Length: 415
Ligand SMILES: Nc1ncnc2c1ncn2[C@@H]1O[C@H](COP(=O)(O)OP(=O)(O)O)[C@@H](O)[C@H]1O
Ligand SMILES: [Mg+2]
Image (cartoon, rainbow, N blue to C red):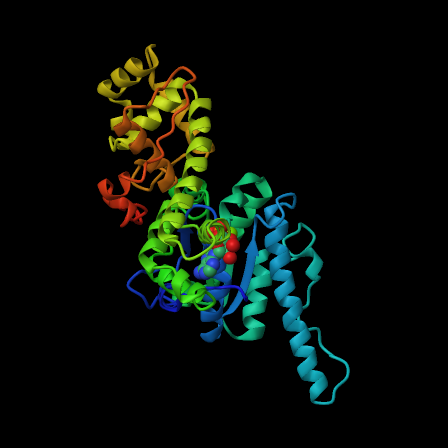
């Protein structure tokens, strides 16, 4: 069985339009996309966005900063540019050879590729400019897990260099250097655009659209092709299971595989699928429950306040907020203790600060866990009691979100 890939051509097309300044959404200053881990960002970039860019004669340069976390992000970015330039040189010299000249008499690029971005070499801007000039076509630099660049000084400098390259290369309304940044750590990605001293201040982070029902339809059809009619899956069940596992294709794949492995014969796969999806969710819940209990009492209290939608700085620092923290933790809270709790929650990738200053939970799963735990009344913010908010089968009907938009995409922040 070959691998199943669900393509999203129209989403890719609208992003290309936005990058070229032709769309309703204008991303000509850079496109910043955020979504939780393992939800399909890299797959979308390589399977859909890059082909769409190529179809528009844009040369893509792709780099995943998480590919090797031991390598400095600036080195990864320079390496990706180098690789593409080297490829271009190969193509150009091949073309020259084909017309009968065996040696390229003038250097195609007059700099040392190994020194791109280094003090003794050309800058990222010069390398990109040169590439665009030689090729006479736009270049798109796609940096996957771009927030990782902020983990080193050189990485941050590389981001500033890209911003400066964009400003120079695109001056006069041109769209020759397109920038795409994605991130699984929304807060760190957002920092690149929301902090005044950060390179892309003024841009905004867009929620990357998670896979949805159309994905489940295509996936179910694909699976059913190799299954006996009596055991075939129903789209509705697959969709419910997909939602439960946080819209992560890999987890759905495992759940489906287990449903077939564990339940031989034509029994209702629906039941098997849902049971297994809830099993996965239970494990995730237990994991999160442990993380929740590992937080400090004030961090837990602040997280609860954020998830109860009392958002914005004021909401978190108001006297009523301070009162609620004290009631939960049993000791008085101060603005600085709340501030440091927030810092900790942001570092842990549990909450992020949006462009309009509101704090939000990073992962829809966290949000659901907190809401469920609250309604169950089982949330303790101190002590060591385990919390298991995993819903029972009967919850499926009661909780509209389980069949619907539990993981609906958050609206992009205002401003
Ligand atoms: N459109 C898709 N069709 C099929 N499988 C997908 C799709 N998108 C993601 N996946 C699968 O989900 C897993 C995680 O995807 P990935 O793109 O690596 O996520 P991310 O970059 O957001 O962490 C991979 O195993 C991938 O094959
Ligand atoms: Mg990825």
